[in-house]
Image 1 (cartoon, rainbow, N blue to C red):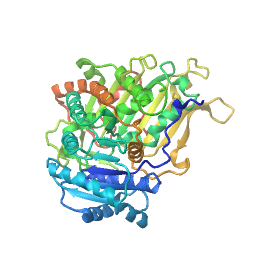
Image 2: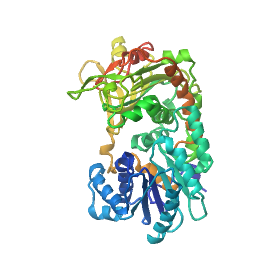
Image 3: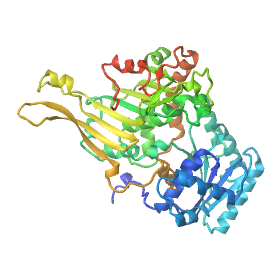
Length: 509
């Protein structure tokens, strides 16, 4: 009998018939990500034939106006040309309820609407996904209202699942409070905490790259790896999210979820299978192994910044404090960098450097694994010192690619050693699917695969890492903001964070 533990879930087929309910249906996330992603799934043949969307929002409207709004939005936010016939079929299955989320009557109406849509569109079963695309302060309220309306009770004929968008709280205490509120009406198996970064091809490919290629895994440890860098850089400023970012900051917005998720995939041990809790168990072990920092260690190993005015792509851009919806005296960080250590057998003493920021020199998300230098200077001290060490570069945005930096001899009679790249680009690897980053995750939710979703204990573990940093930064207001120009790679203190270790950031030209 074959060993099925290592058999991956089959994601090539649509899930069972279901209704997808979006709270916050008139918001940015819905028009930019959720609806385009669901439509892409339909185009890819991964949406069930019997499927409907019900939008719920405070904005006045009805089915007709909702469909008209979606039809206008898709022209701007689709990731590939929209087939009119395909879109008409999709949007005809979209419905709308207007009302305040604090009003129980809205949820009674929703219950009736679900029943009516199931009947009218002949949707078998009782499968419903609730996506909470609302402000985080409403997560507990909406979940409680759905539960009070009797909409979260699962039956043999149907699942009930709730997708929670980040951020999962503001700190450890509020995250635990949110989980307590969710668990009053939901089992943990019904909670899908979504992180769209984990839906990106290169992020998903980290596990394949590591565990399906024998040539890499033996070298993936402290004996051969010198350091790991994870960079999430944005050239954009706050755009239309000034109020949100000024309330949360990039440490909460990016590090606590996206970046620690990527770190855990890089550092995790091989799981017993690649589905469900086997993967999530190993990711939590990594987070639990990250060395906690005392206040003085936070000061030594963490850097924060806020951008001032500068030039990006030849255009003058304002300072953060001059952006719309931002407090002109704001001390919120738009940049964060840190040095983390994973205290386990595989990674002891290997530094993991994380950085993220707004208004940086380039839009870039990448992981750089730097390997140690060769032990002998067979080709001369100059080669040893000038030619860079081997490195593996996983580019996640804007182009998804993998680069391996190796040393090779230049053509000619003399032995001249140089560092050259071996490149793999996803754009050249078969046919790429139109994607927003949400398609895989929404499909996984429909088929019940929780591998790429955050579990309660992983959220708790990530906040335990971030909380000491928040405490120190909250107690010691910055005195030097703004401390980097827009269009640069961040504050000088971030460079010194690596320089004192004899290393430097991998900044692309």
